[in-house]
Every structure is written in structure tokens, then in C-alpha cells.
Length: 240
Image (cartoon, rainbow, N blue to C red; front, side, top):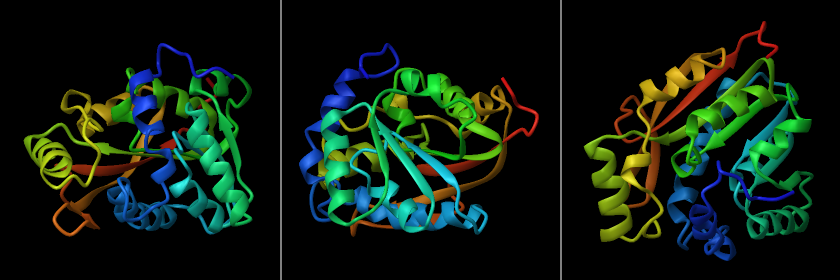
């Protein structure tokens, strides 16, 4: 399947492909992602029923979050537009004998054969990197079964997010590779909620994710001014 799509930013794909070989290094350029990953894993697992679910991770990268969901006994599929990242993800999962289906594709193609297919959809730190986040949310909703859960995480469009997420993290401390984020692409919770509501998704809960760029640590927070995560439930009656 081709990654070419008007809804995929080729420059963003290339940016993350350059980081592929370092994805699993907790002390490398993805160390901020390693810091927040355990926090988002715990929060998401707390929202899920204690049973094995069919889960799809959109924009899975090299599989950092995806593997954690497999370790929690879920049936996991990870998709990403980058062939290189999928190759790294497959190799890492195989090395550690984790059973995960990784597919190099874009959501436009994937949805054709996977409508109403998954109990859980996750789309983490992805929406701020695509040209049309509202459309991506709608397509995630299409992939989700009626009554299923969807999780999104991104950055709020606030001065605080620009200050810590871009200026400090990218340009002062070099915790995040430069040009990872563009302020104009950040998304307010009210915008994300509105787009989700248009796809028959109802907000269940929201949490801030507090990241300290000074010591590269993270924790849950009531403050959503910078990083935040939202959980939605798809209407049981949603069949379109």
C-alpha cells in the first residue's frame, strides 16, 4: 500500500524516518517519548475493561506504545505511513517475541477493509503532525466498533505549550528533535472534542500530561494547557 495521500504530510514522515534507528533508545532523540510513554500506558489501561480487546494504534512509529498494549494481552495492530518505522517495529517485536500485526499504510487505505473492526483505537502524538486532524479523527471513528473506545493525545495551542514544547524542549534543552512540532498545528481540547462529536464520539474523560523538560520526567495532571489525553466512546448506534 502506498503512503502517498493528501492527508499524509510527507515532510513529517521523513522527519520521523530520520529518527527510526534511535526510536528504542531511551537516552536518544526520542527520550521525551520514552518519558511520557509509561504515563499514557497506565492512564489508557485504566480506562479499558479487564479483558483482551482488538486494538489498533494509528501512527505507531517503531512500536513503543504498541508493544506495551500487546504486553497487556490485547490483540494489537499498528499502522504507520513510514516503511522504515514499520520495519524497525517489526524487527523489535520479533526479537522480543511479541505478536503484533504491523502494516505500512495510511489511514485512507486501511479503513477500506477495517470499518467497524476494532474495540479500541489509539492515536497518540499524531494529530498535530497531519494536514487534516478532523478527518483523521473521523476515520479512526469509522474503524472503531460501535460502543468502542478511542484515545487521542496531542498538544494544546497555548503559549505554555509553545514555550515548553517547542522553545525549551526543542531549542534550549534539545530533548526533542528540532522541527518536530509546529505551533499552528497544535489543537485545543475544545476543537478535538467538537471534531469527535461530529463522528458520534462522546467524551468520557480528559487528563493533562505534565512533562518536565528539565529532568525528562512525566506525570498525570489536571492541567491541560500543554499535553493532554482524551478518551471517547463511540455511540452504540453508530453504523455510518
